[in-house]
Length: 224
Image (cartoon, rainbow, N blue to C red; front, side):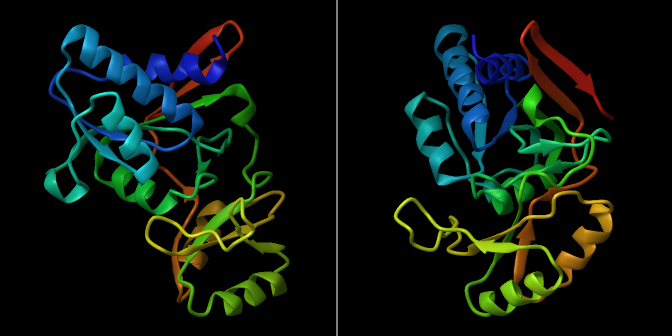
């Protein structure tokens, strides 16, 4: 079984009867959603899903997971999502799939956050993976120039047709080539203070459990 599928199915075991579950976005989260659909069909599991993207909504509905909007639930019991990078101190970069804003909103209203990754996503320090920054379209060129002056080698994300990529909220994404982020908290605070920045892909101090796929099986790491 490939590593992504392995950890996706392992993560589904953490979901219990009656839970409200945040459903992440991406190739690893895809298998978690698939596994939950199987549990609903085979075990009669009753849960409510809150999704982090239109893609996940379509997939969840196709496998029989009942859904509610984030504003229709009081809180979320557990959110299970992938990550693009996880540092040695369990900070993360997310947003490679373009769903960082919705992912961070759902995570912030969750009692527990679980990240599911294969071992290739583990790094000493964040930064090798480009840092996504979601911005409004108006003034996005100004932010590109600002990031360029900072030496962050920004790129405005495009889709497969070469058009400017738009998130589910209609925003743009600027990817920053940082190489190594020495102080993610300081960088996150700076990005939060920039007018026109909607959200960034630094997910800091928010994960409780990380499930890592290794060739010899999944390993569950309790962070806090």
